Image (cartoon, rainbow over all chains, first blue to last red; front, side, top):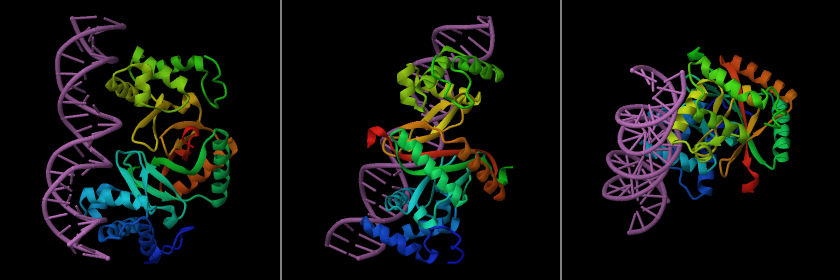
Length: 154
Length: 154
DNA sequence: ATGAGTGCAAAGGCTTTGCATTAGG
DNA sequence: CCTAATGCAAAGCCTTTGCACTCAT
């Protein structure tokens, strides 16, 4: 409801639901209450969440969580994030949150969002596209993680 | 034996075995023939390999591969790399190969090494350390992947 | 001889899938 | 009504572990 405007290319928080509904409709899927619950939880978290965290917050069945997250992933509104532990994490796509990167805790697997200056971002992206193309690789996007120790594990 | 000198901070290829032996000894482990086979395979590959690839190349039992890779990881000479598929990949540590990043194929999971100009690397590292610290995160290192489509999948 | 390493098979743990039931259009 | 979604339980799949055997010191 409030405080979402510090994201770079994000849609306004109040429009997230509408955006998600549109994306789901586009692939012939409904915006059910469970899917709404997941989106609400992810929106509030402002960071990638693990399945246990999502289940605790939404009360969904495990299989429903996995299945709906897959649907939301196919709709392009959720992405799967890799941490250092054995759990997958899920967050809203950059269409919604704006481009950002992650800090992952090597000790507990906690993941938080982080943003770097646009100038460095652009330089980096250009350099990556260049070296990738030289290797016959067609770049879609880049992933950048800070690996380290989080506040609570220090 | 030849052509390893283009790595940035790498040890000479001929010294890898010696380096690995030293690292293993330091943690009270032996440099067995299976471990030597894994190191040889990873050295030749010049890119992160999956377990099936390692097994095919070395003929090891699956459990031996996993166990020895864990030992080599603890010795600091092998690192586990995340791709887009369900398989873990393993490669020699940057102590041996020099600092680099990865291009991962979103279609088949193939991973190859890639390097970016030092200047950008340093800028990036400084920026990351800065924003991480501001968030109470102690950065150990960064991970940077190009995600896209590899030569064979285009 | 003696402890580490090896390989086979079984178990673990996250994720996916089958199936009967429920709910939304 | 009728298809999609849900939840429980079971199955899958990568990875780890138990255990007996082998090898190196």
